[in-house]
Amino acid sequence: MMRISCMRNLFSALAVAAVFLYVSSVQRKLQTQENQLYQAQQNLSLHNDLLLNKLEKLEAQMHAMEERNRNVKTKKQPVKKLFPNSHLFQRWTVELSEEDQRKAEDLFQKYGYNAFLSDQIPLDRELPETRDHRCIEREYAQNLPTISVILIYLDEALSVIQRAVCSIINRTPAHLLKEIILVDDHSQNGFDYFSFTEDLKTQLDDFVRSINQKHPNLVRMVTHSEHRGLTRARISGWKAATADVVAILDAHIEVHVKWAEPLLARIQDDRTVVLSPVFDKVNFHDLEISKYHATAQGFDWALWCTYERFPQKWYDQNDPSQPGKSPSVMGILVADRLFFGEIGTLDEGMQVYGGENVEFGIRVWLCGGSIEIVPCSKVAHIERAHKPYVHDILNTMKRNALRVAEVWMDEYKTNVNVAWNLPRKDHEIDIGDVSERKKLKERLKCKPFKWYLENVYPQLKLIDDILGYGVLQNDLQTSLCLDQGPLDKNTPILYICHYLYSQVFQYTADGVIYIGPLKSHIYRRTLCLKDPGSGKAPELKVCLDAKKLKEHIYWDFKQGHAIQNRDTKRCLEVSVDQNGEFELFIGECSSQHWKIMYVIRDF
Image (cartoon, helix red, strand yellow):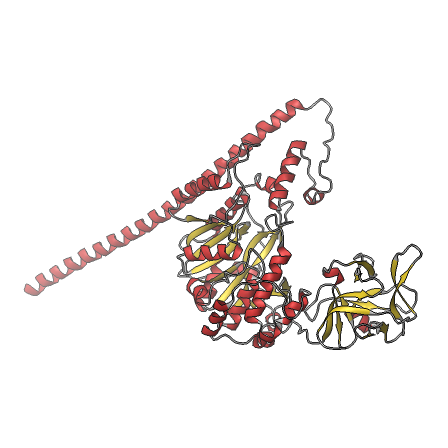
């Protein structure tokens, strides 16, 4: 009887335990469903606010249209085109009233893209699918690192920033998106007394407040009290970030579906890899999306950004959805937050804009990391027609490039001088104090730049055969320089010396005279000076094509002497007519004297 009683008690305990476990399971499911319902309600609330915003705009537009219709005469008159030479209206062929044309053109000049149209289209618009089918099918783990998205802006259109924020919230899993940080590098677009519109900061504050009511503390703002430049703005955003991974983006972007997951998964595998998504182009005039295919990102010896081919083994795998190695990044980057700090963030000595991304890319490779482009991550980026806030990009870029060369390029740094048509020594440009960056280089035990050229970027052709470079002048008239002339003519001319790219030449050890900007890549289509063999006019020809056709592109030249073609024995000459006008021609040699601005080796 005692055994039976014990068995009954045991069965009773088991039954109670089973009921308790069942009830606990039901409670957990209910809690999960409540959380999911709450998240859905939050998203629905944000969607409703956006929808209400669009309806209010639509109502205002309808009232405006009704008012215009009342003022239209019985017979509609064609609207005058006020800005036929505008880059905007040459591509954006829509019928607008004269008032709207003025607004659209004013906003275009202000921002470099069609902000007038941006204000009309939805903040949560759909983007066309541009990913490879393998990207669409790929699934990712749930326990990925969290991400802080940093958006940098200076005098950006409000609707463009709002669209960027909405796309990030709508297309990034909520459990991965820790925060969005907006960094304002001292914007100046204040109250508009003509249209009585509030300034950017006031309107953006209201927008951020409405987002944070539904997603507490999701969006934060960092504001500079003075203009500090793109590099320092990015560093400000990084310092404010708290997630595992930082994505540093421009504010004139929209992210695609599943943009974050492939980036986070790759960094979860290797925290030392720095990544870039693939940019789709948003047209500046109609804001439509143009698909871009994945390419590596590089630079030339002047440190201007260029697109590059991936290493051949990336193409051999026949899977365009796989990440590919890249020599550099073009500014938009994603990295482990702590690794970004360990490797030295960005060089705060870089001014305003240009070259900072190349410096970072070189440093990552030399100092223990690597760079990859991730094709399954797509970000749509507005390509401006002009950058309204950068007025002297050439001088800033030149200064920044020389700073990068001094710190990282070792014995190859003079290539940058040649590319910028500067003397190889004593260029007299202030590049700032680089002592801390050189200490960082030593502390991180970084590899020499030669390793980078041999192992990471062999496409960057060494400039080791140039004897002289710069402007070419004939002693008959030293105020005139040899010039490329009109681009569509392929005929060089004499022109008043201005020392810019169209007057920059390089004379090489094999006797070729290259013209125009220095093309530092092995597959670039550089132009060369050519004697056509007949007639008086010299010509310019793509060097690779001329060599294949065995045309007359080789010249004998010694500093201060004649420039004579090796094949035809004719010389590059200058004549003076009765009116004192100077003309460039090829003909019989008359012992004229030419000089090139800078000499690397005697010739």
